[in-house]
Length: 342
Image (cartoon, rainbow, N blue to C red; front, side, top):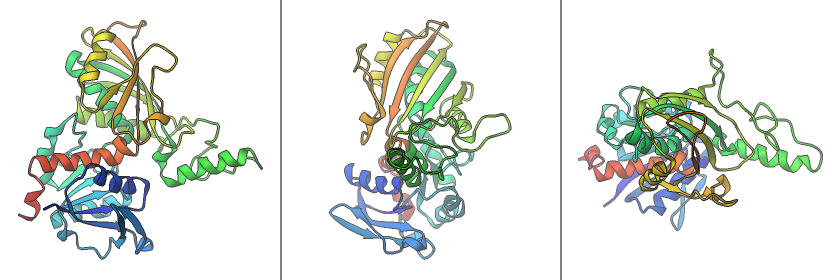
């Protein structure tokens, strides 16, 4: 016997990836429902050897399912997640709406699995920001070994983080450059083709963006509020895969060789770190991959007790859909889904 699972936002990039990963990991699904807005009623999405037709979120009875994977954006989550949770199923939400709610656990299973104990407070579990998810995978084992004092992160975030519209804009502008000139930006504030944009989200009063603030707020909630963290988020003309240049300062010494071995043993990580022209990972190479990759591990010669890392992950997988499914697997392993309809 499996679970009754609803995927809300099933027609989007992350929703479709959730369906793919549920099948790839053979998660025990007895019945799957693809849920979307009214305009997508009847749209078919692939599931196993066939298709499933989308159902209307306004008409669906969520008390009939055990688990809801929510990836329909912040406004939909704000309107629906708490309501769905009260109907019985656990909601694993991919938006930023619930991440900092004190009654909602924010989880990366390899980092803070025990936070799942609080899942029944609101029947909502939050998935972290895509850039945070891959960052904390690398930070947590190093923090356990030498206690992190300060982190400086520069991100190189792919356009898929902005959804299908972001991917379409990069594709159309790139083609246009070689014909009539790049089309005017619509999804992004400036041209993204052959360019980088040091701005994601919305500006806050302190000059940082909300995307940058998410990374330190979420890291504090999942690992340690005493870690000082500063971030610059940059959108780059890459379709899938987020990259991060990470500088870490520790309270106690940690040599690059020791860090390399610690990261090699850490769950969810793969170290690819040779000092030759191909001994590092790029976002192109991680597309479709489950793990987060770490390269360019080296001592920071400008500061004591400090290291530099290069961290890369598929933002549609570990940064979103995969992490949500891994949370579902964690609930299954701990017997927490059966209680929904016991």
